[in-house]
Image (tube, rainbow, N blue to C red; front, side):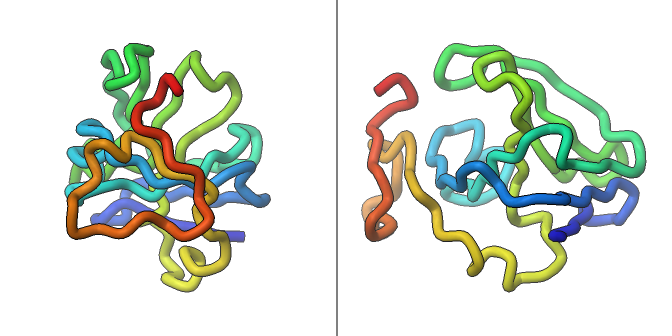
Length: 136
């Protein structure tokens, strides 16, 4: 069971099952919430995630035009997951919060979205679907 935490350790998560999908997202929101050129998101049924601590939430319109709620540590600001009505019952766990770096090697991303915003120096994930935007 993968587990993770925010940078300061005040909020922890434990995933008690496999993700239904793993994807890379290059949208502006994911760049900002990950602090990188993209985010690796695990799509996990909400009932398979246990959260300890009290994350703060912030809801906004996503780059795809849907409302999305960010759950993050109120102390250090680390985003742990996102969720919204476009994918009911699913949390998009930011895979960078997992404590074991090997977790990222266990499930290869099946898709990439917002590839029109992927940096030119970054190669596509081999075998992963490639979507220019979220609405395709």
